[in-house]
Length: 429
Image 1: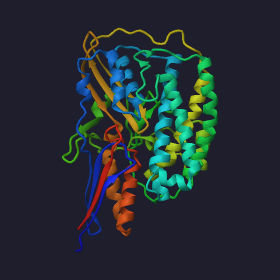
Image 2 (image 1 turned 90 degrees about the vertical axis):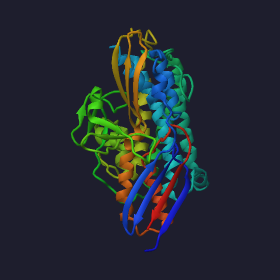
Image 3 (image 1 turned 180 degrees about the vertical axis):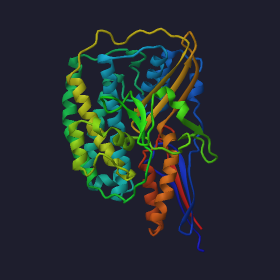
Image 4 (image 1 turned 180 degrees about the horizontal axis):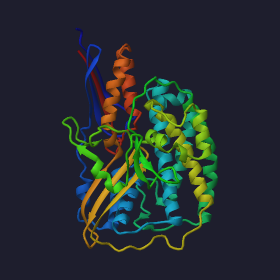
């Protein structure tokens, strides 16, 4: 039997540093490993002994792409531990800044990282030569998302204006007015992006996934909700540890998360869409339909459409929040620390981000647990490759390698919450 090996030393357009190994024996896939070899960053250990007020600014540094998700999950966990619930305009502002983060992250992935796969370009710079209008549109959309985070967070990256109980400072209606006009223009352009990605060609590939996402009684989920799945899971987030388990596998420095007794599951935009389609705005639903989606989608390659739909929704929701905004009397509510354990779970752009903290009576962190979205999708990514490769074994090596890389990027993995590279290797026997 002829042995063949394909190596791609560095796969760009993936956030984080890792490698993928696929071993073929004839037409059979005998091994798939998503290798994450970045060293541990020890954020959970850094937090021990810290005062609760320091936690949001520390957790924001976990990721430069989605710092809001880490801030908000930690803040909700702290407030949960101390028996406080933030409502009204302060809650709405939290939802608004989350809109900004989704827009920033989704547009980056859709237009700069993932679209080149479908159009046959090595990167967004090459794509821009033939599709300058799409790249320029994406830059304008991302700039609008940055403007939301900068106004509410104090700066675009690693925002510093978010605190336990609310914000250090809240905007006036006058300060929000220019942003509103920018967002209305961007919303129209976001609809154009949905139509563009809806016209791409997609591999015929579906699997029977267990999708897991937050579900809120009246909103498309950002900050709050119960954890649900399409296979019967329906729990309060405080029950997370009773249903999910993290395991160390030999080939990865990152823990892999699974559902106890059920195994791999799928978090992120496709999971949110399948479990919360009815909570999207009418405009987002209409755009999804025009792009060829129904209320469910099991093709992970079409996640690029779902991300574009969620981007449009985020603009729509941000406009609604600003139009209804009344400046609160106080920027934050006070709270008193106590010895307790608190739980927080929010929807990062890539999926659920779970935090659990144990505090002593002075409000110092005694223990912390943080589960990012990418670790939860790792086993599902490996299973996708096991199913995808045999069905496309006839492709030549370069094309098959390209498709495998694309299958990984379907999940927009943020391997280390930093920008590095991923190495892909396919070995044939």
